[in-house]
Image (cartoon, rainbow, N blue to C red):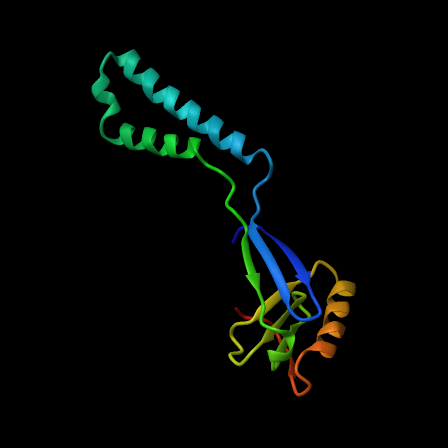
Length: 145
């Protein structure tokens, strides 16, 4: 499990979320530095032994991986849009992990929102009670998925 950054935009008629794996700002430079050192070590070992055959086999795989690591970039965020709030008939409320999931019909999937604190959690829950279908079913349990 890797830390993920979530950005929510809640509109009166729908919700949107962008999420991406979290990498610190120095990750790109660190990866490129490690890759550069690995390439220099293998080329240096080949020059030191006087045999360029050293660069074939496992060393070639390592150099190829290092070159791929040199081109690493932070992954693009994933953007998701929910259905209109009035089409959600089930809401799962997980007070343990501060997660609220609005479902259409299948209760294993839906528009999932995670919250950093209880105040924002309660504010979003109160908002959902006003915008989901009038006969929507609210269930409080731990979100398993």
